[in-house]
Image (cartoon, rainbow, N blue to C red; front, side, top):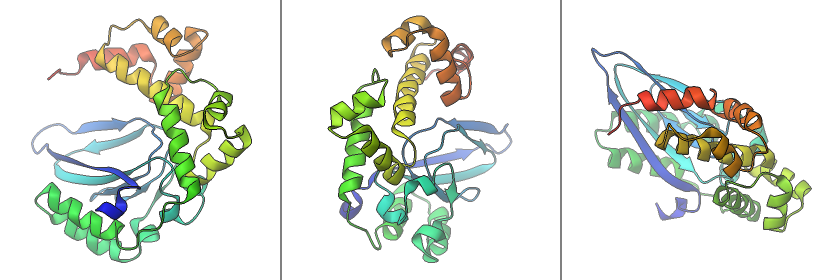
Amino acid sequence: MEALRPFVQYYWVVRWDLRGRPAHLQRVLPNLSVHVSFSRAASGVWAPSREVFSHLLEDRDQVLGARFRPGCFRSFARRPMSEFSGRVVSLAEVFGPQARETEDELLAAAEPAEMARLADELLGKDVPALSAAEEQARDAVRVVASDPGMTRVAALAEATGLSARTLQRLFATCVGVSPKWAIRVHRLDDAARRIADDPGLNHADLAHELGYSDQAHFVRDFTTVVGTPPARYARAQAAEPRT
């Protein structure tokens, strides 16, 4: 839906059929987006979190989610995003009682296109205007994402032309986490992707490329964000089947 384009980055769908097979633990690393998800087990508005999210996939089911652009959910929430941080809020709390009916119809749909159409109807029923603050927050996050070597809020302030104090308020209002945490998440997300692509990557070299003064600091940050040390993460990625 065109009206949602400034807010929704994309829809994602996960389907699985594990009947007669072992359950699978799906882990999602912290990120700066709000996800509006529809599932039998865990529908809701998932705000940015400082923790790895784990979900057990078993039997047969499907989930549809709308990933909002970082900083662009504040107008839907109608309150500072810092009040949502780390929480899962019911769909009805944000989108009204009609959310339950949409959820039932969406989860009964056979095709992803129909699921997305129903999600469009709910999310697009009363689309707010994107505020100037949301635009600033979105652009600030893009600056962070474009430079994995960025290490300090002062560097972000210089790049955006906003003071560090203004950035703190802006991120609390529109993103739900601090700019310092946003910088850390993007650095470590980049590190996790690179290790996943090449489990044999030298971690000391990677730490240096990402602007860490020593490997120990990198290991601490990686463990905080990813939930496991880089060496263990690399072993797990090496054991994953490659397609």
